[in-house]
Image (tube, rainbow, N blue to C red; front, side, top):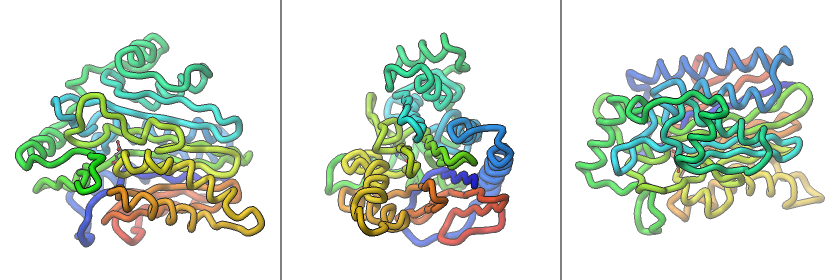
Length: 326
Ligand code: ASP
């Protein structure tokens, strides 16, 4: 049985207001990723790790998502991107932090995984290493879109707080900073189970609008934003500081496998319970997870989470509470 689930970020506090003008393009990207990667996965042309990398790189290439081109803009007006990937069968992992010059940070994370050591590379040395090893280079200014400039301007004018660790403060997710013409969109991720029972997870992001120089969210941290082992694969999205503090992705796996050794702890319960742990830390968001047994969950606590899955040829996508024709 092969399964792939993807997300394009979570956000929003109020009631779901329906699709925006740009949502059809985002849905088309979700559908295209699920169709392309799902079929290749089913035919055995690609394994779980390759599927997760390809899915995330396709979403990085869609500039309406907050990863690769179209990433949100940091306080200093530039784009810095984080990504990570993990293979369940042997726990191999790769992560890139504060990349500024890569078209597809997830490709660099996967090259780090393949190299085997170290697991994480940071900022300029990471970009140089990735480019020397065949990753495509772009100028930082080429990663910036007009939509993100408008969102950044709105953040600056409103003096909104970026991702904050202050419990009394409300951290601003990119989906929260609505500008007239659009609901801004988020971080991207994929979890995959292939025909051989192998699992993988991958996540990529531009982080949070107005983030301070040097800030690292949960996305590149193995165990916080991304986790895969032999039982389950998890990718998270939301206020990264809270997801880091509860080791969210690993905690889903931990509960699923270990909490009640004599009793089954359903994946659904593990996912929802971890989001409940994140909530008191101002950590709104969501996650996707798939187990080796084929359980699949896509819970979120925000108004919306761009999401979809492919399972045995069936595709479903959603943004607000309900799944919609995709
Ligand atoms: N988790 C990401 C971060 O904190 C942001 C998001 O998922 O929207 O960098």
